[in-house]
Image (cartoon, rainbow, N blue to C red; front, side, top):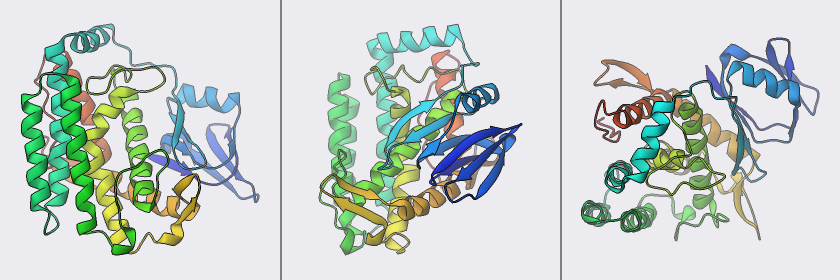
Amino acid sequence: MQSYYLLCSGTLKRNENTLLVEKSDGEKKVIPIENIDSIHVFGQMNFNKELLVFLAREGKPLHIYNYYGNYSGTFLPRDKNVSGELLVRQVEHYLDPQKRFFLALAFVEGAMFHAKRNLREYSGTEPFIQKIEEELDKAYSATSIAELMGCEGRAKEIYYQAFNLFLKEEFYFEKREKRPPSNPVNALISFGNSLIYTTILSECYRTQLNPTISYLHEPRERRFSLCLDLAEIFKPLIADPLVFRLINTGLITKDDFDQDLNGCYLNDRGKEKFLKAFDQKLKTTIKHRRLKRKVSYRTILRLECYKLIRHLLGDEVYAPFKAWW
């Protein structure tokens, strides 16, 4: 199974037991439903209730992005993987300050580990790595979620400051800005982070986890905050190295962005390049040292959800994923 990224405009509909994409120029493409992991709609795509009922029956999430490529929402089929016991445990770990802090710290630790791992690939980054380690030490001594998030925020700022040491000079990056992204690097980071978020949401959906109950980020209405927690670990592992590679190999150029008063965003050609690289990355396999077999990056995301479930149920203490290769 694979994710399908629809950048075109047209109609998406059910065609017996398949999906049919009819592009505005008349071109048609049939997608067997059994091949679909999830659908990501970036273009102006029309669809109807019959399609949504079909996707619900088949358990296929459909993610929607706005004109700029930012995440807008998800159609999630009716939840078949419900577990009252796990839901109670999730809430229990949120309400207990010590249990919540343990998980929140684990997500921060995983994020900082992969940020430092990225920087070690480049010379001259040692002072930045040292500062991130200092923030991690402070995080271990923190006594509240707010204090922990302060450490995480400062570490991330230090991490981003190091980017100019190894990114092409024409992609100079002053600081992280999200709403709206102010330059190409910010646009790439935002786009990659959205994809990590929706991919983790798809994987959470296939487990019994409730994605609205989180530990590092505060649970709020209208967002799946547990996906934000887990995304902290995987943004620097999956999305950021893609940004570095796309820029430094010249696969992404300044011509792949639209920039106006509303900010800087990838155009359709740029999105297509990023999505192709992202999909290849998720399919890349590594030898899992515990399972003793090859698993893809996508599978690693699913395994992380199961690790968290085992912790919540008291079967195994959670430790964040840390790449060992």
